[in-house]
Image 1 (cartoon, rainbow, N blue to C red):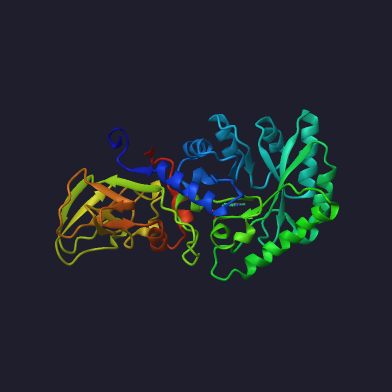
Image 2: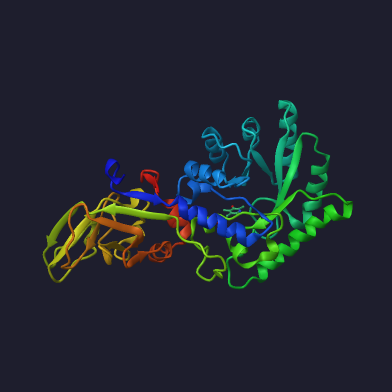
Length: 371
Ligand SMILES: *Cc1c(COP(=O)(O)O)cnc(C)c1O
Protein backbone atom coordinates (compact mmCIF):
# COMPACT_ATOMS: atom_id res chain seq x y z
CA UNK A 1 0.00 0.00 0.00
CA UNK A 2 2.86 2.33 0.75
CA UNK A 3 4.34 1.81 -2.68
CA UNK A 4 1.80 3.78 -4.64
CA UNK A 5 2.08 6.93 -2.55
CA UNK A 6 4.75 9.14 -1.16
CA UNK A 7 6.82 7.18 1.37
CA UNK A 8 5.86 9.63 4.10
CA UNK A 9 2.39 8.66 5.33
CA UNK A 10 0.13 8.85 8.32
CA UNK A 11 -1.24 5.43 9.14
CA UNK A 12 -4.61 5.45 10.90
CA UNK A 13 -5.74 2.32 12.71
CA UNK A 14 -9.51 2.18 12.48
CA UNK A 15 -9.44 -0.88 14.74
CA UNK A 16 -7.81 1.20 17.48
CA UNK A 17 -10.36 3.94 16.94
CA UNK A 18 -13.11 1.36 17.40
CA UNK A 19 -11.53 0.10 20.63
CA UNK A 20 -11.14 3.60 22.03
CA UNK A 21 -14.71 4.58 21.13
CA UNK A 22 -16.03 1.44 22.84
CA UNK A 23 -13.83 1.96 25.92
CA UNK A 24 -15.14 5.50 26.31
CA UNK A 25 -18.74 4.44 25.73
CA UNK A 26 -18.38 1.70 28.37
CA UNK A 27 -16.90 4.15 30.87
CA UNK A 28 -19.58 6.81 30.54
CA UNK A 29 -22.50 4.40 30.95
CA UNK A 30 -25.81 5.96 29.97
CA UNK A 31 -24.34 9.17 28.57
CA UNK A 32 -24.20 9.47 24.79
CA UNK A 33 -20.77 9.81 23.19
CA UNK A 34 -20.52 12.63 20.66
CA UNK A 35 -17.12 12.21 18.98
CA UNK A 36 -15.37 15.50 18.29
CA UNK A 37 -13.76 15.41 14.85
CA UNK A 38 -12.69 19.02 14.37
CA UNK A 39 -9.40 19.99 12.75
CA UNK A 40 -9.38 17.10 10.30
CA UNK A 41 -10.32 14.69 13.11
CA UNK A 42 -7.24 15.72 15.08
CA UNK A 43 -5.16 15.08 11.98
CA UNK A 44 -6.61 11.60 11.36
CA UNK A 45 -8.76 12.58 8.37
CA UNK A 46 -12.22 14.10 8.84
CA UNK A 47 -14.29 12.12 6.37
CA UNK A 48 -12.91 8.58 6.86
CA UNK A 49 -12.99 9.02 10.65
CA UNK A 50 -16.48 10.56 10.59
CA UNK A 51 -17.80 7.72 8.44
CA UNK A 52 -16.15 5.08 10.59
CA UNK A 53 -17.64 6.53 13.78
CA UNK A 54 -21.06 6.69 12.17
CA UNK A 55 -20.62 3.01 11.31
CA UNK A 56 -19.79 2.26 14.95
CA UNK A 57 -23.12 3.70 16.01
CA UNK A 58 -22.18 7.22 17.03
CA UNK A 59 -25.43 9.18 17.04
CA UNK A 60 -23.92 12.62 16.43
CA UNK A 61 -20.62 14.32 15.68
CA UNK A 62 -19.10 17.59 16.82
CA UNK A 63 -16.86 19.93 14.82
CA UNK A 64 -15.57 23.47 15.23
CA UNK A 65 -16.36 25.00 11.86
CA UNK A 66 -19.21 25.15 9.39
CA UNK A 67 -16.88 24.00 6.59
CA UNK A 68 -16.01 20.84 8.51
CA UNK A 69 -19.68 19.98 8.93
CA UNK A 70 -20.42 20.71 5.26
CA UNK A 71 -17.53 18.45 4.21
CA UNK A 72 -19.08 15.61 6.26
CA UNK A 73 -22.50 16.22 4.70
CA UNK A 74 -21.00 16.25 1.21
CA UNK A 75 -19.34 12.93 1.99
CA UNK A 76 -22.76 11.50 2.80
CA UNK A 77 -22.68 11.64 6.62
CA UNK A 78 -26.28 12.22 7.65
CA UNK A 79 -25.88 12.18 11.46
CA UNK A 80 -26.68 15.29 13.48
CA UNK A 81 -23.54 17.46 13.45
CA UNK A 82 -23.02 20.14 16.08
CA UNK A 83 -20.81 23.04 15.05
CA UNK A 84 -19.32 24.29 18.30
CA UNK A 85 -17.55 27.44 17.12
CA UNK A 86 -18.86 30.97 16.92
CA UNK A 87 -20.97 31.84 13.90
CA UNK A 88 -21.68 34.90 11.80
CA UNK A 89 -25.10 35.81 10.49
CA UNK A 90 -24.35 35.18 6.83
CA UNK A 91 -23.45 31.54 7.60
CA UNK A 92 -26.82 30.68 9.13
CA UNK A 93 -28.64 29.84 5.87
CA UNK A 94 -25.81 27.42 4.98
CA UNK A 95 -26.27 25.64 8.31
CA UNK A 96 -29.97 25.37 7.68
CA UNK A 97 -29.63 24.13 4.12
CA UNK A 98 -27.40 21.29 5.33
CA UNK A 99 -29.49 20.48 8.39
CA UNK A 100 -26.60 21.24 10.75
CA UNK A 101 -26.91 22.02 14.44
CA UNK A 102 -25.91 25.53 15.44
CA UNK A 103 -24.43 26.83 18.65
CA UNK A 104 -26.43 29.78 19.96
CA UNK A 105 -23.92 31.60 22.12
CA UNK A 106 -25.88 34.82 22.73
CA UNK A 107 -29.45 36.14 22.65
CA UNK A 108 -28.63 38.06 19.51
CA UNK A 109 -27.26 35.01 17.67
CA UNK A 110 -30.29 33.00 18.73
CA UNK A 111 -32.58 35.74 17.39
CA UNK A 112 -30.71 35.71 14.07
CA UNK A 113 -31.02 31.92 13.85
CA UNK A 114 -34.75 32.01 14.65
CA UNK A 115 -35.30 34.69 12.04
CA UNK A 116 -33.28 32.95 9.31
CA UNK A 117 -35.19 29.72 9.97
CA UNK A 118 -38.50 31.59 9.69
CA UNK A 119 -37.45 33.14 6.40
CA UNK A 120 -36.43 29.79 4.96
CA UNK A 121 -39.45 28.02 6.36
CA UNK A 122 -37.38 25.41 8.22
CA UNK A 123 -36.66 24.48 11.82
CA UNK A 124 -33.19 25.31 13.09
CA UNK A 125 -31.60 22.85 15.52
CA UNK A 126 -29.60 24.69 18.18
CA UNK A 127 -27.58 24.02 21.30
CA UNK A 128 -27.28 26.91 23.76
CA UNK A 129 -23.78 27.75 24.94
CA UNK A 130 -23.12 28.83 28.51
CA UNK A 131 -19.77 30.21 29.57
CA UNK A 132 -18.92 28.95 33.04
CA UNK A 133 -15.31 30.03 33.17
CA UNK A 134 -13.60 29.72 29.81
CA UNK A 135 -14.33 33.31 28.70
CA UNK A 136 -14.56 32.15 25.12
CA UNK A 137 -17.98 32.00 23.42
CA UNK A 138 -21.26 31.66 25.29
CA UNK A 139 -23.37 33.73 27.65
CA UNK A 140 -21.99 34.06 31.15
CA UNK A 141 -23.52 31.67 33.66
CA UNK A 142 -24.67 34.67 35.67
CA UNK A 143 -26.55 36.06 32.65
CA UNK A 144 -27.80 32.79 31.16
CA UNK A 145 -31.44 33.15 32.28
CA UNK A 146 -32.17 35.67 29.53
CA UNK A 147 -30.91 33.26 26.84
CA UNK A 148 -32.95 30.37 28.25
CA UNK A 149 -36.07 32.53 28.42
CA UNK A 150 -35.59 33.79 24.87
CA UNK A 151 -34.99 30.21 23.70
CA UNK A 152 -38.31 29.12 25.17
CA UNK A 153 -40.04 31.74 23.01
CA UNK A 154 -38.38 30.74 19.72
CA UNK A 155 -40.80 29.37 17.16
CA UNK A 156 -38.38 28.32 14.43
CA UNK A 157 -35.27 27.46 16.41
CA UNK A 158 -35.60 24.21 18.31
CA UNK A 159 -33.33 23.94 21.33
CA UNK A 160 -32.01 20.39 21.39
CA UNK A 161 -29.08 20.92 23.73
CA UNK A 162 -27.37 23.18 26.23
CA UNK A 163 -23.68 23.01 26.97
CA UNK A 164 -20.59 24.46 28.52
CA UNK A 165 -16.86 23.81 28.26
CA UNK A 166 -14.14 23.17 30.85
CA UNK A 167 -10.95 25.19 30.97
CA UNK A 168 -9.07 22.89 33.38
CA UNK A 169 -10.61 19.43 33.36
CA UNK A 170 -7.26 17.81 32.50
CA UNK A 171 -5.45 19.38 35.46
CA UNK A 172 -4.29 17.63 38.59
CA UNK A 173 -6.28 20.05 40.74
CA UNK A 174 -9.95 19.79 39.79
CA UNK A 175 -11.07 22.71 41.96
CA UNK A 176 -11.80 25.09 39.12
CA UNK A 177 -13.42 22.37 36.99
CA UNK A 178 -15.78 21.61 39.89
CA UNK A 179 -16.63 25.30 40.22
CA UNK A 180 -17.47 25.39 36.49
CA UNK A 181 -19.68 22.31 36.78
CA UNK A 182 -21.51 23.86 39.79
CA UNK A 183 -22.16 26.99 37.78
CA UNK A 184 -23.55 24.98 34.88
CA UNK A 185 -25.80 22.89 37.13
CA UNK A 186 -27.11 26.09 38.68
CA UNK A 187 -28.03 27.44 35.23
CA UNK A 188 -29.82 24.16 34.48
CA UNK A 189 -32.06 24.62 37.55
CA UNK A 190 -34.02 27.05 35.42
CA UNK A 191 -35.66 24.04 33.75
CA UNK A 192 -36.46 22.34 37.06
CA UNK A 193 -38.02 25.48 38.42
CA UNK A 194 -40.35 25.68 35.43
CA UNK A 195 -41.06 21.99 35.53
CA UNK A 196 -39.85 21.50 31.95
CA UNK A 197 -37.51 18.84 30.70
CA UNK A 198 -34.10 20.29 29.87
CA UNK A 199 -32.64 19.69 26.43
CA UNK A 200 -29.52 17.49 26.15
CA UNK A 201 -27.04 18.75 28.73
CA UNK A 202 -23.32 18.35 28.06
CA UNK A 203 -19.98 19.59 29.30
CA UNK A 204 -17.36 16.82 29.49
CA UNK A 205 -14.31 16.87 27.20
CA UNK A 206 -11.58 14.21 27.38
CA UNK A 207 -10.15 15.53 30.66
CA UNK A 208 -13.55 15.50 32.36
CA UNK A 209 -14.40 12.07 30.94
CA UNK A 210 -11.26 10.75 32.61
CA UNK A 211 -11.51 12.60 35.90
CA UNK A 212 -14.97 13.96 36.59
CA UNK A 213 -17.77 11.39 36.17
CA UNK A 214 -20.28 13.75 37.77
CA UNK A 215 -19.93 15.93 34.66
CA UNK A 216 -21.15 13.28 32.19
CA UNK A 217 -24.80 14.50 32.24
CA UNK A 218 -26.60 13.43 29.02
CA UNK A 219 -23.73 13.49 26.56
CA UNK A 220 -19.93 13.63 26.53
CA UNK A 221 -17.63 15.21 23.94
CA UNK A 222 -14.34 13.32 23.66
CA UNK A 223 -11.81 14.55 21.16
CA UNK A 224 -8.20 13.60 21.76
CA UNK A 225 -9.06 10.60 23.96
CA UNK A 226 -10.85 8.91 21.05
CA UNK A 227 -7.59 9.08 19.17
CA UNK A 228 -5.81 7.30 21.99
CA UNK A 229 -3.86 10.23 23.37
CA UNK A 230 -4.30 11.61 26.89
CA UNK A 231 -5.05 15.33 27.14
CA UNK A 232 -2.25 16.14 29.58
CA UNK A 233 0.66 14.57 31.41
CA UNK A 234 -0.99 14.95 34.82
CA UNK A 235 -4.48 13.67 33.93
CA UNK A 236 -5.58 10.42 35.63
CA UNK A 237 -5.57 7.70 32.98
CA UNK A 238 -8.77 6.02 34.14
CA UNK A 239 -9.79 4.74 30.69
CA UNK A 240 -7.33 2.65 28.70
CA UNK A 241 -6.92 3.93 25.15
CA UNK A 242 -4.20 3.42 22.56
CA UNK A 243 -2.89 5.73 19.85
CA UNK A 244 -4.69 5.54 16.52
CA UNK A 245 -2.12 7.42 14.46
CA UNK A 246 1.38 6.50 13.32
CA UNK A 247 3.58 8.70 11.16
CA UNK A 248 6.00 6.83 8.96
CA UNK A 249 8.52 7.43 6.24
CA UNK A 250 11.52 5.77 4.62
CA UNK A 251 15.21 6.42 4.26
CA UNK A 252 15.82 8.10 0.90
CA UNK A 253 19.52 8.83 1.17
CA UNK A 254 22.61 7.58 2.97
CA UNK A 255 25.94 9.30 3.30
CA UNK A 256 29.06 9.29 5.38
CA UNK A 257 29.85 12.68 6.89
CA UNK A 258 33.40 13.58 7.84
CA UNK A 259 34.32 15.10 11.20
CA UNK A 260 33.63 18.80 11.49
CA UNK A 261 31.39 18.93 8.42
CA UNK A 262 28.14 20.56 9.65
CA UNK A 263 24.71 19.27 8.72
CA UNK A 264 21.79 21.34 7.33
CA UNK A 265 20.87 25.04 7.30
CA UNK A 266 22.68 27.28 9.71
CA UNK A 267 25.31 24.58 10.34
CA UNK A 268 23.93 24.05 13.85
CA UNK A 269 25.22 20.49 14.26
CA UNK A 270 28.50 18.78 13.56
CA UNK A 271 30.24 15.66 14.74
CA UNK A 272 33.84 15.38 15.91
CA UNK A 273 34.03 11.92 14.36
CA UNK A 274 32.92 10.34 11.13
CA UNK A 275 29.21 9.36 11.13
CA UNK A 276 26.57 7.90 8.88
CA UNK A 277 23.72 10.30 8.16
CA UNK A 278 20.44 9.31 6.53
CA UNK A 279 17.92 11.68 4.98
CA UNK A 280 14.16 11.25 5.51
CA UNK A 281 11.63 12.96 3.20
CA UNK A 282 9.61 14.83 5.83
CA UNK A 283 9.91 18.39 7.09
CA UNK A 284 8.14 21.35 8.59
CA UNK A 285 6.17 21.64 5.35
CA UNK A 286 4.50 18.40 6.46
CA UNK A 287 4.01 19.62 10.01
CA UNK A 288 7.19 18.11 11.45
CA UNK A 289 7.97 21.15 13.55
CA UNK A 290 11.19 23.06 12.94
CA UNK A 291 11.44 23.23 16.71
CA UNK A 292 12.32 19.51 16.54
CA UNK A 293 15.73 20.43 15.08
CA UNK A 294 18.53 18.81 17.08
CA UNK A 295 16.08 17.50 19.72
CA UNK A 296 13.77 14.88 18.22
CA UNK A 297 14.40 11.21 17.66
CA UNK A 298 13.07 8.78 15.07
CA UNK A 299 13.00 4.98 15.08
CA UNK A 300 14.82 2.94 12.45
CA UNK A 301 15.19 -0.85 12.65
CA UNK A 302 13.73 -0.80 16.15
CA UNK A 303 16.20 1.72 17.54
CA UNK A 304 15.97 5.44 18.29
CA UNK A 305 18.27 7.90 16.56
CA UNK A 306 18.56 11.69 16.81
CA UNK A 307 17.46 14.24 14.24
CA UNK A 308 20.57 16.32 13.62
CA UNK A 309 20.78 19.81 12.20
CA UNK A 310 17.82 21.98 11.30
CA UNK A 311 14.56 20.44 10.14
CA UNK A 312 14.10 21.60 6.53
CA UNK A 313 10.78 22.18 4.79
CA UNK A 314 10.81 18.74 3.16
CA UNK A 315 13.67 16.74 4.67
CA UNK A 316 15.39 15.85 7.91
CA UNK A 317 18.75 14.28 8.60
CA UNK A 318 19.28 11.55 11.17
CA UNK A 319 22.53 10.42 12.74
CA UNK A 320 22.81 6.63 12.84
CA UNK A 321 26.45 6.81 14.04
CA UNK A 322 28.00 3.64 12.65
CA UNK A 323 24.86 1.48 12.40
CA UNK A 324 23.43 0.29 9.10
CA UNK A 325 20.47 1.63 7.20
CA UNK A 326 19.55 1.36 3.56
CA UNK A 327 17.48 3.29 1.10
CA UNK A 328 13.86 2.30 1.56
CA UNK A 329 14.23 1.30 5.22
CA UNK A 330 11.11 2.21 7.21
CA UNK A 331 11.41 5.14 9.59
CA UNK A 332 8.91 5.77 12.37
CA UNK A 333 8.45 9.44 13.22
CA UNK A 334 5.53 8.77 15.56
CA UNK A 335 4.50 5.29 16.62
CA UNK A 336 6.15 1.97 17.34
CA UNK A 337 8.94 0.17 15.53
CA UNK A 338 9.87 -3.03 17.35
CA UNK A 339 11.31 -2.08 20.71
CA UNK A 340 11.31 1.65 19.97
CA UNK A 341 8.27 3.87 20.43
CA UNK A 342 8.04 7.56 19.69
CA UNK A 343 4.92 8.95 21.33
CA UNK A 344 2.91 12.03 20.62
CA UNK A 345 3.95 13.21 24.08
CA UNK A 346 7.62 12.73 23.14
CA UNK A 347 7.24 14.91 20.06
CA UNK A 348 5.24 17.49 22.00
CA UNK A 349 7.89 17.63 24.69
CA UNK A 350 10.72 18.01 22.18
CA UNK A 351 8.84 20.69 20.21
CA UNK A 352 7.72 22.57 23.31
CA UNK A 353 4.02 22.09 22.64
CA UNK A 354 1.11 19.78 23.48
CA UNK A 355 0.07 16.51 21.78
CA UNK A 356 -3.01 18.24 20.32
CA UNK A 357 -0.79 20.51 18.25
CA UNK A 358 1.46 17.67 17.07
CA UNK A 359 -1.56 15.79 15.69
CA UNK A 360 -3.46 18.69 14.17
CA UNK A 361 -0.32 20.15 12.64
CA UNK A 362 0.38 17.16 10.40
CA UNK A 363 -0.20 18.70 7.00
CA UNK A 364 -2.74 17.47 4.47
CA UNK A 365 0.13 16.89 2.04
CA UNK A 366 0.93 13.76 4.09
CA UNK A 367 -1.31 10.99 2.69
CA UNK A 368 -3.50 9.21 5.23
CA UNK A 369 -3.57 5.45 4.94
CA UNK A 370 -6.34 3.53 6.76
CA UNK A 371 -5.53 0.09 8.15
C1 LIG B 1 -12.25 20.54 21.20
C2 LIG B 1 -13.46 20.50 22.06
C3 LIG B 1 -13.81 19.32 22.74
C4 LIG B 1 -12.94 18.09 22.77
O1 LIG B 1 -11.78 18.37 23.53
P1 LIG B 1 -10.73 17.21 23.93
O2 LIG B 1 -9.90 17.84 24.97
O3 LIG B 1 -9.97 16.91 22.70
O4 LIG B 1 -11.54 16.06 24.40
C5 LIG B 1 -15.01 19.32 23.42
N1 LIG B 1 -15.79 20.42 23.47
C6 LIG B 1 -15.48 21.57 22.83
C7 LIG B 1 -16.39 22.73 22.93
C8 LIG B 1 -14.29 21.65 22.13
O5 LIG B 1 -13.96 22.80 21.53
